[in-house]
Length: 341
Image (cartoon, rainbow, N blue to C red; front, side, top):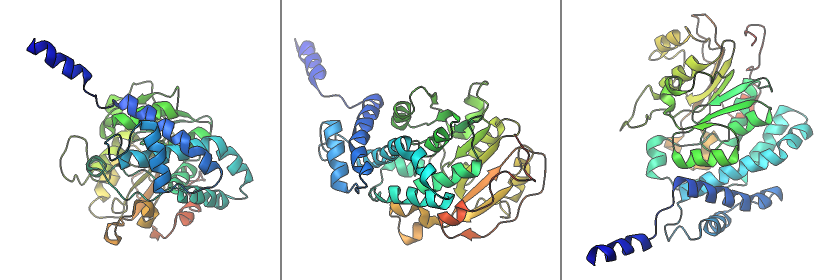
């Protein structure tokens, strides 16, 4: 009798949502936000809370969802918006700078990400801001002939630009909920769940991308507590090993991970056994202003472009780009000194 009563109690107790359930609710919440974005209306905290509460059937105070999930939801809504209006935006823009300005206005409609979870801190889950994601995709010069790998795909803010270019996608994301969200946002696209620091060791041999877009954790590795100084370099090396001959890799890293930095120069020389860094420049860390870090936490970022080639020379740094628009105008597209695919 006691055993039967205990079993009934367990069966009746509410179960926490699975990553699959959470991902489905996130997509539903993002779809609720989309009409407002289409009208150019700002999504404030109240609007975001209402969409999440309706989709999850409860409030954050009741434990139905967290603000970290809510911020992921806002990013998913941007992906939906770009899927619907991205081609028209690019056709309407008179220049890349004009398109970038549109992306900045869209990103500004979402609320600042003021609350961080322990997981986001430990795994350094800070998504690529939409305008910077557009710059990274432009630097890759994507075409419909490409197959694009994103090793740490997050909520798809980089992947959606590859999709807009007509490229094929191969997405990887270690976090279960984000991976589930990607499967719903990019239906029919394979989403793996490997540690991206060893992505080359895990992917099927048939996955041979012609382009890699990546914004890896700067100093965090899966299942490792504390700071790992060369974490981003490990991600870069593994992704570069997977890149097809003649392809290119565009990465956002911490500004300190630079070819001219004494601590990393030899590592970049070794990397160039697999690829040639044709462009690398720092970007002002305030591009992450929507994350509302304190002034002391604004870490300059670095964008680097690396197509495979045999060359040992590493480029010297070009200083810090003060704004994303400056980065957009940088010479990252194919040129005479860059091997064709």
